Image (tube, rainbow, N blue to C red; front, side, top):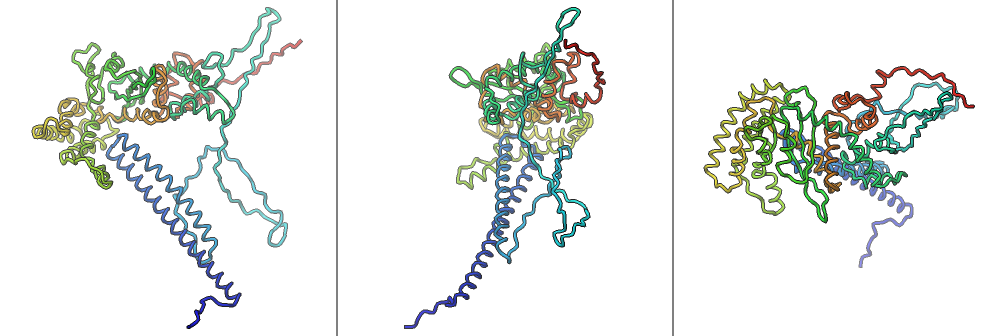
Length: 562
């Protein structure tokens, strides 16, 4: 029987050399594997980034403003965040593995060029001490050639402070009367909250959807324990103090001859249950037809969706109302209305949405790939979407132009398409069953044809009601965080603050900075000049003070302390 020959040498030194070689090969294999993982993660992140860009461009181009598409983009954003984090982690692992190997170069992921930090941020210069002598030869004859600067972004945690306003009291030696400067203004009588704190409280609650109980928990962790009831007192008082600005915005919106209107649900606490209340919004936005008046959003709250609420909101108003087909508006459209006519302008986004639901090819493909039963795709619905998209293409080309120019293009290009669309819709209704979903979608437009063709006679009218839907988007985003309003008064208060915050956003103003400045100035501001504090007229007090603050003359009076 032949003896088995071992492939390993018997010499110890040879075994050590073989082990070192094997370890090197293992390190190289590990480094290559780590590089492959890093490269794969980087590619996945790039693909996710490109998909997100394509989805955003498609949404911008085709105007899909449904909440479902917004949620899809949010999901893609979260997926991209995770993939970028994975790629960064794998990149570090690949670098560590390559450092243990001399034959494999670490994979370097291509990162987008980082923009420089904003110039307005303060810079703290930290100088690393230079050597007193040359590390190579020990000579002390060193000459500075220049310097390299590495910028690191850092954040200072939020700091709290208590401002002590000292008001000295003096008595007159002649008349024996006591004089003292007035106390500083607080929104709450004998209050304690400063304007910046109040602005943060309001914006976090209504702009960032953080309920007061969560804010109170965060404040306590920062060493400032405040009860929810104490914070709620400040919110109520601030809303009351800001009511004059709400009234001015309301007057500005209702002074327009064309507004957008819409509503959404808002849960509200009731006795032993939760009712479904409503928040209504009316938006004035003249930017699509190059109007000079600033945009604004007006919110109202109601316990239900009865038609009497929009009728009360617009009781003294007349003009063009762009809204959906809600029946509560019908009384406003009635001929012979005392306050003047309200003309209905149909929303093509609502009309097209009905066909989208019947022609959702992507959703049908997804359901089929999951083994689920997909809805039927109707060729008629696809054709309807294409016909409506042709109108949207024309509108994108004239957005922001003067009404006369918009009207000229519409009569030349859109009017023939609308005439063809009317004939086509009428023909489809005559062929389809009265109970079919496609018939209902066609009749939605045919029954309101005057409202849908009104844009052909007025260059100010928009094709959609998306301005109102964008203003209402803050409500669905916040519902999952704050869950419900505590009372009807809470809903009314929310309408006031939403009006202020959304109007500031429409005018590209930081809502929190604006609220802080307004709350600091509103008590001493003349009532006849209150419009100066509106977002579109607002100038921060720091800028205003530098422009027209008079020079202070020091008081030379010597107070007798005897």
